[in-house]
Amino acid sequence: MAVEARELYESSNGDCWYLVREPRSGQVFIRHEPNRASGGEAELIEIADFLRQGSGPEQQELLRLIGTLLDQR
Image (cartoon, rainbow, N blue to C red; front, side, top):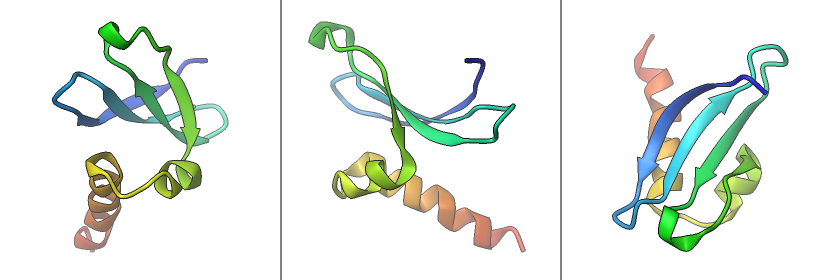
């Protein structure tokens, strides 16, 4: 799947979250890439599921980014 990506947040332990869009379908997801030491695999997360996971700094950054859409008027 070819996607467009924008880094959303990188934690102090090296986990990264990206806002990604699949150009053909227009679907938007969060891609979580765990740090190498954890040995986990990258996963795509639906936006609603990502926001339901809590109110950590990665969720706060997504909400901040959404809020900037209002500033562009």
